Image (cartoon, rainbow, N blue to C red; front, top):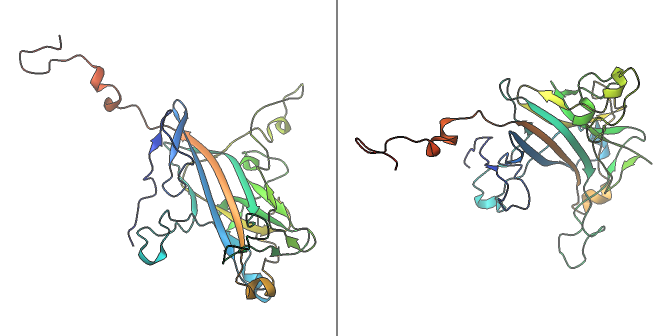
Length: 271
């Protein structure tokens, strides 16, 4: 299979027709002049049973290949979700969302041979699935006293009745990072959910099973699917979405050269 560079996607301009930005090609859009906006969507498949749950507490998110036939697929799935950034062009993460996949319609479609395909996840009540930036195989968590916008780059689900149910979903921990109100002193707490999370190098986003949203270790007991779901060929799917923006590439001669007056040939002019 061919290997494709990570930044292969175009940056779409207003007027381009498209239904969804390509996570696989890291396709962006000029939603605001001077800024490129991106959306990454991926999944982690869970098919292990309870006996092995201790080995399933941290998950890379797969971004699937656009090529749907496994037998002659040209491009491999991307095995991790990476926010593209550099010191020259930092990325600012402003949104995240996590969910547990659920068949559409719920419970599957009787006329579809492979349906249903999704399953809920067994877990320890009160534990979380936390989507956020990877810190050398452990989470950063979302600290109580926020200093850098991690709430905008995180999303979480809490297990209830020993499970993460199919269809469970949540949006960004800090909602949209906009200023809305301040105290008379404009204290640190006023900005807690009003900051984007800045990264200056390529940053992997992962899902971690933790005891609390503030945890900075993979502290959960792990997740699994039931024997019945396994026997039926179903699996659990953890879904993740991340939104970020970054500065557009620098202005270049190519942006303006066609409008510059110059002699088109020796002894000629543009009149």
